[in-house]
Image 1: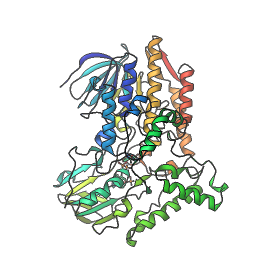
Image 2: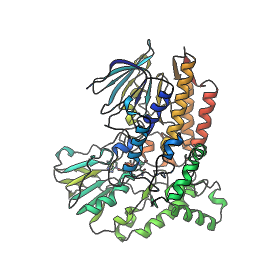
Image 3: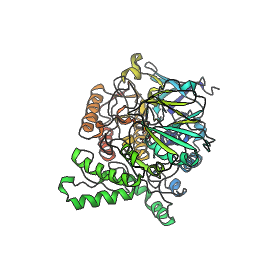
Image 4: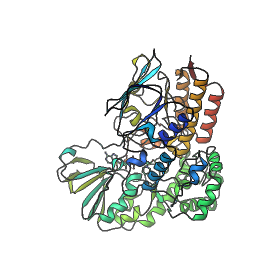
Length: 536
Ligand code: NAP
């Protein structure tokens, strides 16, 4: 039921994940009236929806938490190196309690449209529950990986069994005991869920289109000592993290080029970092993400390690990635993933060779062969980075639709705003480091920038801020130029929009790193929001 009709707020925030929660807190500190709309029935965002078995963060817990409040961080104790989804969601609820966030949040409510009224200088935000509110600022805290996507397989409506998407998992969980299960996809969500699904299923068939690089997660319980020590320095650590490329400090990037190292030195770097777990491996050489030669050395090492785990000779080649450089698709952290394929009741089907033709009442047909199953798990990913933003019908000045403006790919200035859409902000939008970084560090960086910007606008009695078209053009060109100096564009990844048929192929995140990006944000704010038009 609509709770708010014709009310006016200073700001509307769309989404109550980490970004929406912190944005609300910062704006309330300024005494602004704020309404958060959230489609789920609680806070959490990604961690609210992704409840599939094995869901776990791939950034270490001691770094994947808010860093703005000493009281909050001291009041929470993480238990594992990489937190599992239930623990992260409990943490988010703990923060929501601490800051009393829910009183300004309306749950189970999806924002359907947001329309700018030029004369009034206000956004009109409408929801699927019939709310229609007005606000000076509209802030999209919609997340980069929140529009779950099931591919348009023919016949899906005929399937008589149960089917699930990892990104929209039933809250009560799913019992696969004794069932014949198909998992479609082999990205991070599949890599995490497959070992646990295989523990229950009577038979598991994995439909793989692209083999991924997976490396040992090395998850383990945290010791009391390391948790205590981190609490002492967490806020300091967080400041340091903002100056790093990835927003994490648990490892450093080796800046030496592969060619300038001896074979022994390279082996030591690769081996040491591989066994550290996590993304440290990608920091083995300064040019690992920039040159084919350096990348090939790391990819060969990764394949040789992965090969050691796979015991069925007939599927080794299938499981080893060989069509893209390592790291250009998100690395997957493996906890018993490759080992699972050694089990007699687990099979893999190569759908690159034999694509899925249709889904029938009884299962899946691929390459002319039928696979009868009781359940299908779509681990097929998301309409990443733009899907959730464009899921809202956003109309800016002169009736322009954001969907039309972005039809050839997203266009933003700094990933924060888009010309023609005054007072509309994106948190970790396309054109910012976002998914290539520790998301919480990037969220805090953006929220702090946006809230300071709003504070200065309010103090200066300035009604609006809007990206200038030429600044936006330059930023888009700069983001593309940086990406083209890396190997990233060489894979069919969701970073490129390549997982969605018909989506424009544009490399969406900013590859220059969180630290460099932060300097740019500070420069822009310090120069009276250079590149933005401020309206009286
Ligand atoms: P994803 O990485 O996009 O993987 C989707 C998988 O489905 C890919 O293997 C893809 O194959 C396959 N697929 C898509 N459409 C298909 C089709 N029509 N036919 C056959 N296969 C198809 O999605 P995800 O695994 O949900 O992960 C998305 C991102 O979320 C991750 O990269 C990561 O950033 C984040 N995430 C993080 C964690 C973590 O923190 N540990 C866990 C889960 C997710 P192709 O590769 O050939 O496209």
